[in-house]
Length: 410
Figure 1 (spheres, helix red, strand yellow):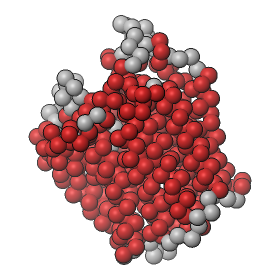
Figure 2 (tube, helix red, strand yellow):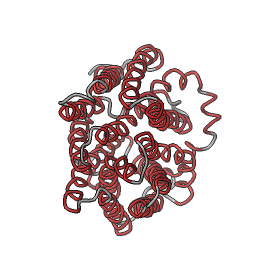
Figure 3 (cartoon, rainbow, N blue to C red):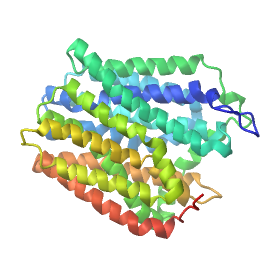
Figure 4 (cartoon, one colour):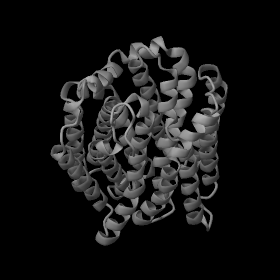
């Protein structure tokens, strides 16, 4: 990237301290997520129990949203990222050696906690280290680095599973990635300390976490209307990550094949992260989020009718790619809507409240899926989530024009 005209900032200066750790952490998560249901089943759970354990990663992220701002403010961004990497190493070591479904679920919950703190620390670093003039591009690139890791991770996990013959070897991929993250962060120059205001990022994330529920109440109008739509966006994304591995187990696909298919879908998702931003900037937020939600909703409804077909595997591959494209079209929509709605004079508390609302939907959806699977069946749960996605698109069609002004076209 070229140097900016005002401050001499170069994108390559953040490649190691921010983008490489984000990519590596994403690789580790991408390797683990597709195999969670298969490992849970091997520990004696049924399909509903496997769904509950898979949900623990987003439940952990939601639980981590509240204290993560305080923690990053207390110990600093780089230390928080290193600590998160270490916690995820411990969590995946426990997962690798788990002999009970309960202990395995706790390890997945801990991975979600680590991911929440890691993500917030990266956001704080980028928000204050990168000049305001190119901050949006930098944050978009950061999101792309993480999605790139989710693209690579399933393929790497599938390769390791094929070599070892064990689904649990995917946890070793995450451990290796997290160790590399910690080493990189320890070895790199401390760019955080060289900023003009090195504690600005910590102040930002602390402000997001202080008075969270008060902020939710004070902004209940926007959060109930636009935030409920964002919560459904989060729910659809989390359901995708929960349902696809469960579906693969249910139709009898090996864990390695499941990882490959989900990796292909992640490739489609990753390829569209920049396109999504361009659509939002040029045509408006609705032209990104509505096609995304309608696409994922219809994909899930379609998938619900394919379970017992002779071509169930082929349909699974098609739907995984379809959902990857649909999710990619909506990349960055939650962060963008929260930035649009946040008060300019003190945005941090609202940003935290909006993220908590969206993550609440993401945490609740897999739990609901698990409950419906227990009471009914996986196809029924899949269809219902798809219908909710279509309803969410309708909510945002009504509320976004009211709360978010249309951007000027260039």
